[in-house]
Length: 193
Image (cartoon, rainbow, N blue to C red; front, side, top):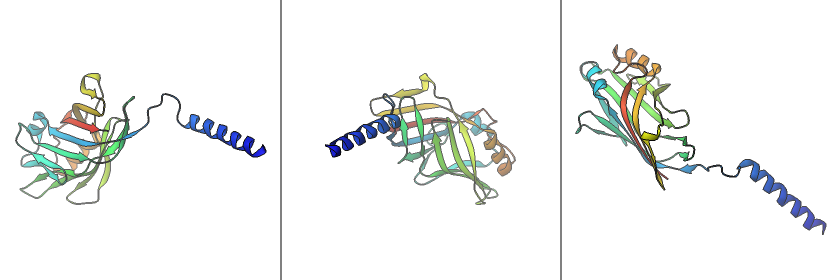
């Protein structure tokens, strides 16, 4: 009888711990895959320093068939909660801005999308130098640019340059394609869960 009471007490204690750890109605994180697409805005293309072009490193891909160049990065890991929309995930591959006339380059690697803080972070390196972490882009999650389906989320909208992004472009090329708060990219993020 004492063993049954002990087991019963342990079960009640475990139930209480679980209830505290995951409150009723809390959304559980779900793993995601998908892709993120970064298309330079027309204004950013016009403002790029002469001879500077956008390139991509696999598994990211570059598409120049549209009106402005776009880089698509696969998403193969990470997790989000859907309601409210939050979480983060790394982007596979990287993109670079290069100038053929003198070989000057600015690489953005280790890209990450943080839905909770509404920003893309990256490591930036100039001419293969030591990379430094920075907040590259910010964005908003507005009802008109977020579509949530049964097992997918689509997000569109401008990716606005941060001051840190402006500073690293100025350091690399003595010019920047967008000022802080201005759109560098038109973003499209598709997540399957």
